[in-house]
Length: 89
Image 1: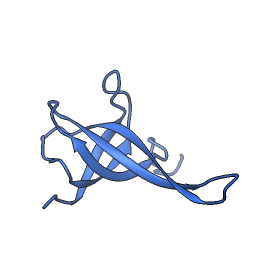
Image 2: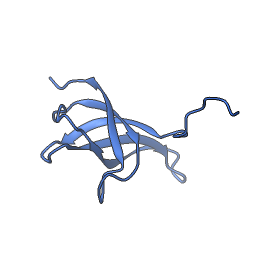
Image 3: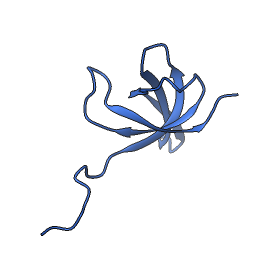
């Protein structure tokens, strides 16, 4: 009999800031990362927007949140809110 391992596997986790909460049960999270430019060797900031599921509509604009990858919930939603790390002031 196999060991009790999670059947979900490893899922990606991202942390970022909420930039929109206008949709019902959906937030838009912007995640920034720094990459080194291959020619200039300078660190450059890159960002990407993720649509995440927020079933309780608990997030506000400016909140710092953690999101986790999940199955497709709609045409663009592939992430789910796990926790609100810091509320906006």
